[in-house]
Length: 393
Image 1 (tube, rainbow, N blue to C red):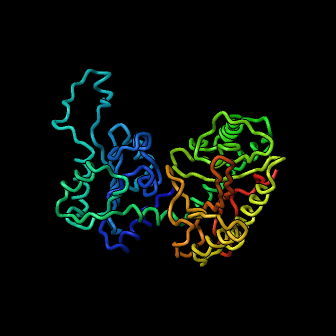
Image 2 (cartoon, rainbow, N blue to C red):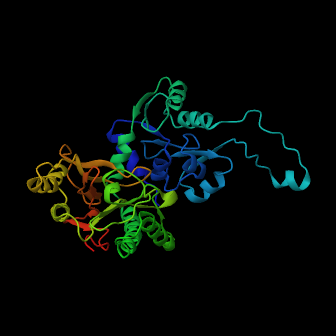
């Protein structure tokens, strides 16, 4: 992926900030275009860190473990200044191994924080307004940074990254097209076997097998495939078996692995012999989603998009209550990001936004519905990115 540090520099200037320490794996990737391996696997702050100046003429500096520096140098192609910190890996030169040369170890093992301190000072940020991802950093890490730069004014920029990620670049849009196509293939395969007698485990295994076969993505671990009563609660696939009259529901996604991007899509299919009210409810939820899709276009306040579906369902089912009708989506591990499609979000839709539009209804102990598509806002309307999986069997 292409680095998006320019977008972050611009937003830092808009916020009156001089720079930022970027600590989370996903936002490190957003800035640089690639992820740190152990950083991504462990999610521990400090394994890889980016220090970004708001000034265009000051290059971004990165630090990672000595074992990973050559990989970073290859991936960055000279765009960033990369500095190592010392680790237990114990890297040795060929001369030491082949010829028995004795090279004295460094007098002091430099930690990640040691290197970050140097980078911040070199970039003239130690006494400036400095952004931190305070919603990601553990308290102890925050305290270490605050102690290292007592003259800096530290501000939370977690929301800044979420805002930046809410409008996708052309490259990100193509990433989502690929992911949604893969998800659609998995969901369509599930639609072909969904019938009484099939288990929840068979549904999810069909999805996983189909997605994995593409080699382009992996199934999201949180993916829910359920039937009957289990569809009315938050749960992973269990021992349920589809019965006559059940609602078969899935709420699932795929991930781009180390590129972090993720999807979120749902379908609900009513099996033959169900209570007539369930058919009626399914139709109304589905029609509510279709009305949202038809209404979505740049400039429409997101709160108005919420009311398109919410008011339509509530008109027929007065007891219907739902706090939101979808959300933005970009980089995991979270699927739901701002802007959220609710009654309080006045931000207008913008071309390049990708939203998971959803119209759920859950009846505890009875059945559950969620009907959801990934939708790209275009210059003059929108495009459904998950169009192939049927809403009706």
